[in-house]
Length: 359
Image 1 (cartoon, rainbow, N blue to C red):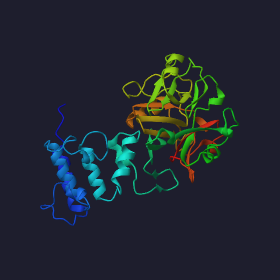
Image 2: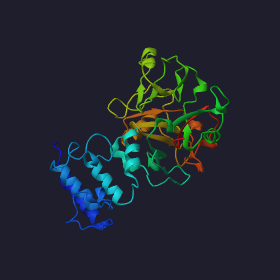
Image 3: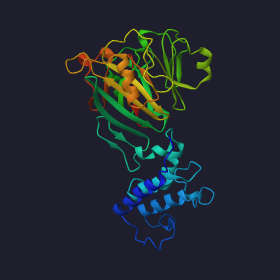
C-alpha cells in the first residue's frame, strides 16, 4: 500500500491548535520564524505550524538550526514541532530539562507526550504520570471475561523492578500487597512467576544473578538492561547466550504468548491451557510494557484459555508477551487498592513485578 503524505493533515491539525491555544504578544506576521522561542516571548501553536511547514519544505534542518532539536535526537523533525505545540499549551515548562529527560530515556522521543513535565499526577489507583513514569489503567471484556491492563512507560529501566517475598532471595512468601509496600516509590505491581516453586533457573532480578542454570522444559523471558524483552521457546536459550546478554530480569514460567511477528499462537508448551485467572507481561518496545490480569473462576468471568490470552495480547498490539503464574496467584494492585478481582482474595507469592518512581 502506498503511504500518504501526512504533512498536510498534520499542518491542518496544528493550525486548528493555533486557533485554540494562547497567542503570543507578538503579531504572527511580524515575528521572526520561531522568534518567540529565541526572543524570550511565549511560543505559540502558530510557531509549531510554521515549524512543521518548514520541515516539510526542507527549509529547516538540524544542520541549519540545531537549536530547534528540542528532543536532542540529532535531527529536527515533526516530533520537535509537536514539542513546540506541547510547550505552547503548557505541557513543557523548561526546554533544557525536557531535552535532557527525553534524550536520555528508554522511550523513543516520539512518546514524549506520554509523560508529565509539570509535576507528578497520581490517583493512587495505578494512573500515574511524571517525567520518568507513565501508567494508565485500562479494563475491558473479551470472550465473556474481564481483563485489566496497566499500560506502562518508563524512561529508566530501574523504574521496572522485581521484589522477593520476605525481602530476600528464597525468603518467605507474602501477599502482593506486603511485597509492594516494601518497594521504595512503588506505584503498581502484579504477581510474578512464583520462582520459588521451581528453582530451575535462570533467576536474574534487578540485574543480580541468583541462579544461572537454564531450564530446558520451560519457555523463558529475559528483560535486558536496554529495555528489550525477549522470549525464548523451551530448549532454545543456552547458558552461553544468557551470559552474553546484559540480563536485567528473567522469568521461568510461560509460555510465551506471541510468535515472532506478534501474532497469536495456536500451540503452547504448557500444562495450564484451560480457562483460568491469568497474569501476563506484555512488551511493545523498549520502555513500553503492560501488566495484564484476567479475572476468573466466577459467574462474571470464567477465565481465559491460553489461546484467548494470546489473542488478547495480539489484539492489544503487543510485540511479545509472556504468561506468568495464574489462578489464585493472579493479583494486580496499586498503592490504594486491588485492581482486579483475585480468586478467593489471592494468595501469598514468592515474587512480584512492580513499577516505581525513579529514586
